[in-house]
Image 1: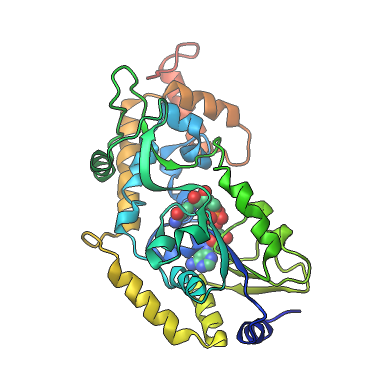
Image 2: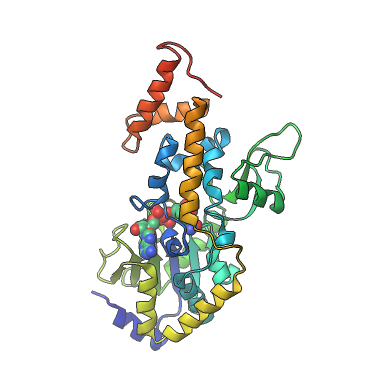
Length: 343
Ligand code: CNA
C-alpha cells in the first residue's frame, strides 16, 4: 500500500513532476459554499422546502427554462464575489508555482482556484464559471452590472432583446448541457500523470467521473475527501486521506516540507481578494429558500413544466414525498378532475 511518506520522498527527489488534480465542491465548503450531496448541510438537502421535482432539477437546463426562480433564490448565497479561497485552493496554486501542476480539472464554478493564483492555462473549470452570463434562449450576452443587481435582489433577470424574454443564465454548464470541447483535448493529461490528487468530490457527476480510472496502474491516486468515493483505494498505489481537505493538504504540505510557504501563499490570496461586506452565505441561502417557498405556497400555483417533471419523477428514490402530497392537495383544491392551477 502506498503512503504519504513514499510520495513525499518522490516529490523531494524530483521523481514526481506531473500532478493532475480533480477537484470538487468539497474544496470550497470551508469558504462558505455548501456542496451538493452532504446530508443536511448540502445544497440538495437545503432545497427541500422548494419541492423541486428532484434536487438536481434546479441545475437542469429544461427546468431552468420554465422555472428559473429557484436558481436565483440561491444565486446570492453562491455568488463568488463574496468568497475567499481556502487553503486547499492555495495548495493548488503552490503546486503550480513549483511547476508540478500538470493540469487541474475543477468541477467548481466559483473561480476560487484562479483567485488563489492557479494560472488559467493550467486548469479547466469543466462546468464553466460565474464570470459571464447570457440569455439561455437566444444566447445574447447580458451586462455584468445588471446581473449583479439581479443576484443581489434574488430576482430573475430576463433577456434585453425585445420579444425574446428568455431568462438569463450564468455561463455554467447545467445538467442537460454539454461541457466545452476543451475537456476532451485536456483529458489525455490524466494518462501522463505521475500523481493524481482527487479532492472534495463525490465522483458522481459526468464527465469528470471518468478521469481517475484513466490514471495508469502503479501511479498513485491520492483521495482527500470526507469519505471514500468512486472506488479510490482499490489499487495498491492509492492513498486515502479522509477528513477535511484543508487538513489533508496541510498534512501533505508538512510531509513535503512546504507548510510555511503554503500558509503564506494562502494569507496573500485571501488578502488580495477584494470582498464586499462580510456575508453569512449559509444563513442567506436558508433565508432566500424560505422566502421563495412561502411565495410558492401562497400562490397555490404549480408551473406547468414543474408539474410535468414532478410527475415524470414520481416513484424515483429522490422523490420528495411531502411535496407530492402537497401537490395532490393543490390538485384537489381545483376539483378531482379540474385543471391544476398553472402559471
Ligand atoms: P458533491 O457531489 O456535493 O460532493 C462533494 C464531496 O466533497 C462529497 O464527497 C463530500 O463528502 C466532500 N466534502 C464536502 N466538504 C468537504 C471538505 N471540507 N473536505 C473534504 N471533502 C469534503 O460535489 P461534486 O463537486 O462532486 O459534484 C460536482 C458538481 C458540484 C459540479 O457540478 C459543481 O458545479 C457543483 N458544485 C460546485 C460548487 C462550487 O463551485 N463551489 C458548490 C456546490 C456544488
